Image 1 (cartoon, protein in one colour):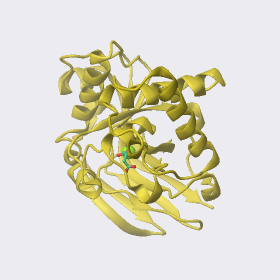
Image 2 (cartoon, protein in one colour):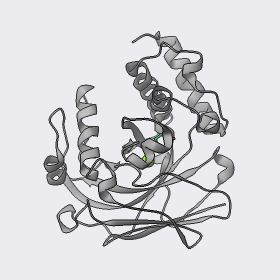
Image 3 (tube, rainbow, N blue to C red):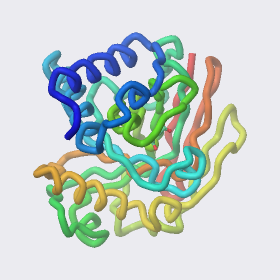
Image 4 (tube, protein in one colour):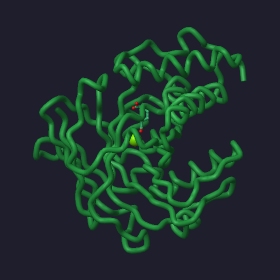
Length: 262
Ligand code: 0L1
Ligand code: MG
């Protein structure tokens, strides 16, 4: 760690205020180039603590930058991890207000819900599949608090990996019932397909992203609890949305889930 506790707390307050007030900011490493990975996750933890103090409940986790399309889009080479709280969750078909967000984008994802806890290090695809209750389609709405999405990985981690909203829906399926590598993924905007892919775009198998999350948390002395919902990462690049847009995610054999932006 390179930053002291008051600085970490000030950064968490700044980033969370930007999220809650839909205001953008330059990336925080501009003022703190010495910030290290531990500092970045410590700021993220402090944002979660602020939310919990106000009554928010953690509902799961997200893996980010897990596909080559997304890594290429953002010019980075490593996955990142964040938390999901109940205030980010919206119901299927819901309308999301764009004036509560800065510059939202949507990502088509495969969501996992666990029936058993998962602990790393040493977690692998087989352990994830054995611990998974069901998988289902999920749309993540990301909204980096950084001006023009200009950031580096440490700034993104501190900003809870741009988490803003998510919806899951469609058909919940046992993970054994579907080939999660070859299942086709179609993201439609206003009735037209705008991004296409297959599950294997996410680290070769979406369960590998969940294993990477368990191993990341294990290194920090934490586990993924039973019942957690995990967004395994965007299968394609993220797609910008604006008021009036309707977005629908279809995943082969898993039905569809949609959102509207107003
Ligand atoms: O969920 C994601 O892949 C987002 C990671 C953060 C980077 C971004 O805002 O695009
Ligand atoms: Mg995502």
